[in-house]
Length: 258
Picture 1 (cartoon, rainbow, N blue to C red):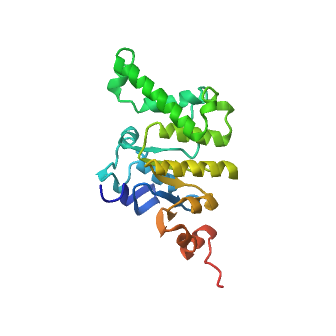
Picture 2: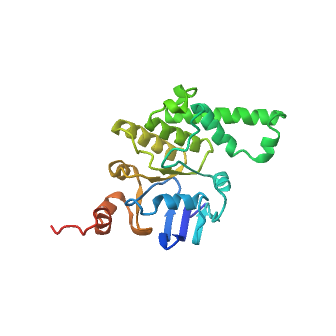
Picture 3: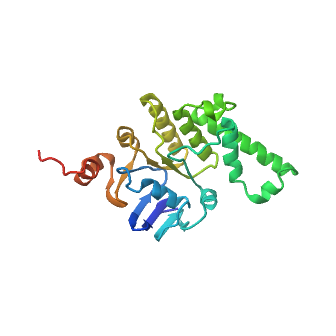
């Protein structure tokens, strides 16, 4: 299939008098690692919420695999092949690591299968497949040894890895990572970079939001920069870093003359 895997055209979102996303155009080819950066309040998480059905856009179109997903409910977006993590991990504190991943798998099981979950052989087979997928996801992020551990005992970095495992169990073709490196040591961040690259090699396309510029600029194939909801730069990491508009957005002043 030709064309980008994911694309938004003229995407716009207002909250009262505030223009959070301003006529944004963005396209991501298959198997690209694309970084979305910008100062606090630039609209990055709002963008993810629009894509994943948390918010409805006021204007524009969101397309995935050349089909419009604009306005779909979050569950239907995930069923289409898009998953996300959250800036603040949304975990079930009273459950184990394994059960948290299993719940994510169940959440995206068609209702017709859930109605039969207590009966048929096919339902038992689905249960086994969910368990296998959960184990594979935990192994991939490095949490297999903590499958039976209570979520409350995890470190901040481990909680983010669990969020990633919960997203991966839905087998997405596009994965949106919202500040995955927050709270990680340099060594932990390096480990996550390796896993993100392995996901890309496995055929997953990734959009990554984070404030760790040192990591993102080495990880991303391309970078899009938002400021007050508007795209101000896009391109290869080195070119974006050298942009006067980007420096001004982050520092609040023009670049000093040489």
